[in-house]
Image (tube, rainbow, N blue to C red; front, side):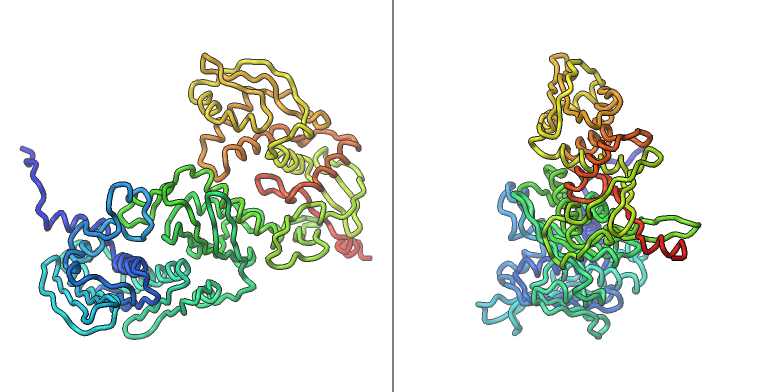
Length: 557
């Protein structure tokens, strides 16, 4: 016979809740440090012994807690940061649920000493695995000190699944690295087994913190500061030459809160793709300011995960901001040129006559980097060969045309670049694909399409933009719309307009195997010179150069 349903005791429910919030020693430190930050502390000292299993202390010089409220602070769901249900959807503090102190209290022995600046004495309160011991007045500096001992002693099953002392120390150091980079105005100090391991000055210098953590100097990093009407991103990025084999050095925070968001990480990696080798990852520390009403931080017990309204717009902003700063400061990744069974690496930097100054925000357009080229011919009906003053230039006709079309599609007014091709046809892609296209019908309008939803749920296409000079085979609208629908359904870092533009550019660009006349080739080169970056929308190079010096060497001259 199955067991009857009954309500769990307060002790068991507290332990279950604690298990969600407090997984290991670093969880305790994270919650206490975030409380110290919320208390406007300018100095936070963390001390641990035996990986945090035996002893943890977090001391700050913040506002302190009223002596009449200190005992209440250790009750579950007791908080000063939420007044009503609306506050849950616009949380500005790092902590807000009122669970941290209660959770820590239920799995350890806790002692808290706190004093407000206007109080004569401090208050000391003690607990042992949720049991109140005593409260008394003592002398102490203002701020709050919390001591945690014998973590998980009452939960041997949880204790045995924890990592080694060395591993737990590593996790704590990693957290301190992240939080100090996010809150550069605060001085953090970490003491491990009586020895200072880590200290920051709290002087708002993210570069000095990076130097402390990674032993890397200022010229390794690029400062990032971009904003639009809804978002702002600030921080530093590593030069692509300083990348590593894992993501452990990528730190992202939202409104000062450290988050682990795979979509944001993927977006950052995508923005670096033209500049670094496969499976290499940058050092990055950025904080993204977002209106509190469009981010939900109440989706994970430890608040590491967040959800966004209009995530596409945020990811597009991040991608555009990082791509722009990288385009302005560094060349794309090296491109291998194979000749005589040797691999010679040529940087696109070779195309730049003068190295752009560090921090220059001027757009890197090809017309500023490409010299005057003399058209030579087309080979394999794929590459356009040109003679330049310092080498032979090879242009991938499809990649180059993709870049040209993508930028032209992205412009709001593209009537000068395109003519209209009359279609006047009805298309039924199936309910799911129809709805995906209809949801984004305004984006098609922005791109010059005369397209609408039909009363029956299908799609009516009256006309589409095209370029007569580069016109390829007849466009299969059904196939194109199906591909766009599929692209829109995938997890992407681009906005819907960018997704559609990429597919339209790829679909309409001249193909490999298509013969171009001399006039068409010259027109393509002129259009390419007016684009912003020398690669296609997917990050593949559109232009490479073989230096004359290399050719002379190979021919023994």
